[in-house]
Picture 1 (cartoon, rainbow over the protein chains, first blue to last red):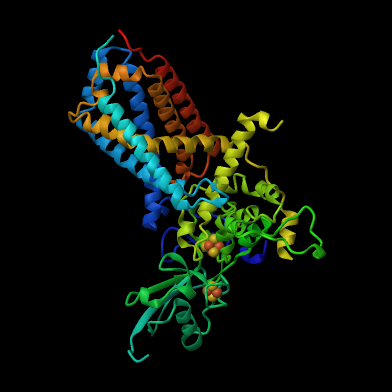
Picture 2 (cartoon, rainbow over the protein chains, first blue to last red):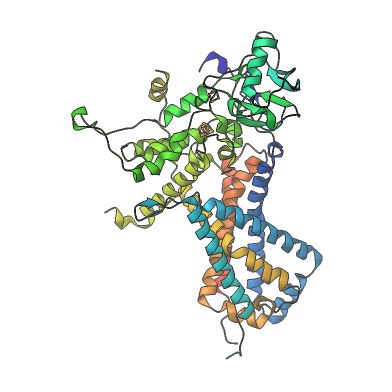
Length: 154
Length: 249
Length: 133
Ligand code: SF4
Ligand code: FES
């Protein structure tokens, strides 16, 4: 391209201000880039939430698997969840899950292009719908876990 | 300047002939509440140091040429008031992610190239003869794309984007938003053409929805939304094509 | 005109054919986790372990609940899609953390783990014990 855009030209780095530059042909993202502002840091946490959700899912699968092994194995596993390391994990998993829900449902308003009676449905309406869905889903989980599985064995 | 107050403005200096690397120079100039950062730069150029280089034109947030990094954030300097920083200092640097030409001036050819790639004009299979009149549009049809048509090509979104920093091949926020703007236009027939550029790994799929482009955009274009919507549309099309093959006959 | 010339010289790239597939599953996983996970963690793993009598704290109740086919479908969708959601995000997260090379390999490991995990989830959910003893 133009001679100005030579590979050796200086490029201001996104990450650290002021006065940090790299050459045009070098990678422009330093590993600490997300410390440049709070939104970047929040983005990194938001993405990290997926790790906690995945580990939590695997842990849930293990617990489900023990249903087959009988009451004792299951109860031992559940009892272990009360220990401090697991407690800390569950607290973090819950916090990250909340962060994930809020950021994901806000972003959901920016996804689909919906129409109602020939007009565009606004981003706000879609986001509001997503949060309403969250409330309903949470209620379903609440009812299932508080009242589900009661009664006599047949 | 009755008050006699002053403010310190520090600007990036770089001359490819004389300097090994960019450096910072501070100027103390009179402060007035109604001055914007661009006014301060012009004051310096007129009265303090005529060698300071920067771009500007309209002074009213419409030409998109005065974008610089102000205290770390990509900003239109003609729309950024000194009073928002006063009595603190102001550091003005060139936009990030673009090669530096001189002082606060960057080389925008990569952006111009990418803009061209999305064909930001109305494409018709066959143009309607002038005698048949103009292409008409209802308010609802205008509303479909209007937000994305507000882009002034200021490149703040590129300077804010960590993906573009890492991945110079990335088509980038404004180009994708403008591609979508024409794809949503009822008069346009070039959507398939543009999707060949948009729905690629260097296009929408490179984006991880950091969202900083939409934060810094001075025109509320919300390019992150344009990218997200294109992802959703493309994905729905993919599943329709692969899971409902009978729909295609 | 500069732009016209660029257009002529720039070959159109290929549309990415597999990304929409993963992105669809990723979005579904993010959605289901966003809707259901916080409440389930709160009750099952925080309040439940603190003594609130939730179904999962009791073997019998958990077993009876998991006998419900709807609950099984939910558990499979939640766990497997959460794994795909992780895979797709983590693949890019590695780059955000500064790893620039080995993209294909990283993607393979991420999606591979998610597929293996989903198969395991299917196995576990299908073999859940039934209602009666
Ligand atoms: S999308 Fe916004 S920030 Fe980006 S070039 Fe257009 S007006 Fe500027
Ligand atoms: S000078 Fe035109 S946008 Fe600032």
